[in-house]
Image (cartoon, rainbow, N blue to C red; front, side, top):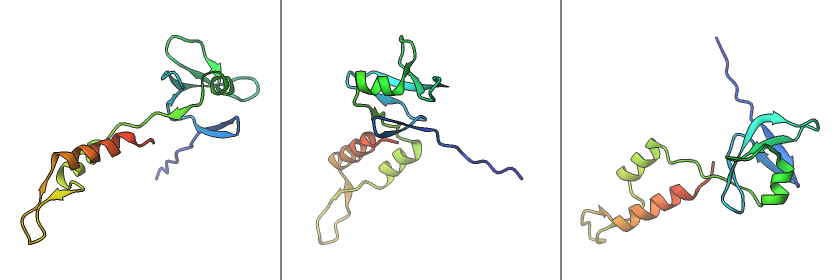
Length: 116
């Protein structure tokens, strides 16, 4: 029997804890990801496309604040949204409720706005 445990890599910079498995977005919209390496002090090295790796603390102070990039909506979440919308139209006398486009758009907006 094999037991698999996921080790979550985190780092602390400027009093904030960062999940290194996530992609982080800076104030200019650049996406920073952990290279999998650290410097001699143990600080994770982050990299964005076209740049050399930089220390997480330096990225935070020079380009921050950093926010976690939203994770993509899963197929199961999309299916759930299509099958059971949050709001429906219909009267209170028992008329069959039908999903509305506005309710569906609101639900997708909520799913897009969440982070990992």
